[in-house]
Length: 125
Image (cartoon, rainbow, N blue to C red; front, side, top):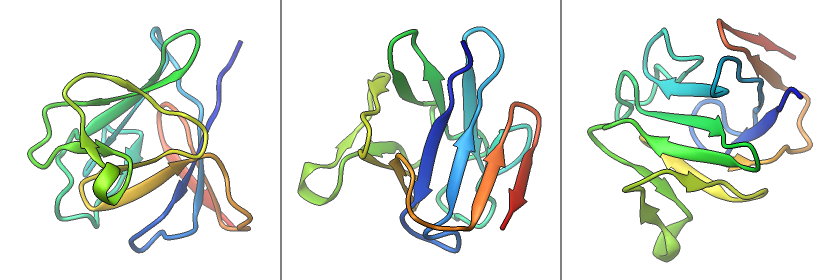
């Protein structure tokens, strides 16, 4: 069964944009970083590492893992924010940060939609 994860940008130049991630491979995963070959490229974030983090399907939930980034990957916000030392489950509605970019698991009411697949990112309005 194909799994799709919806993320909503909560900051930066893409604030409000919704991204649908459909990972492929085994295990199913999508990498996030500053440059390709990452599937979700965030090139305008100065705190983003080339290969910053990855999101993968564990068989029962979505997991977020830091890939040895320089500035860390964080789950939660403000006082509740915690830096990832190991893969962590991403719950629906949960906010996490990669570099300076904040993302929320789940969609938003916004017509600007980007679709990220395993090989490329295609943006549409």
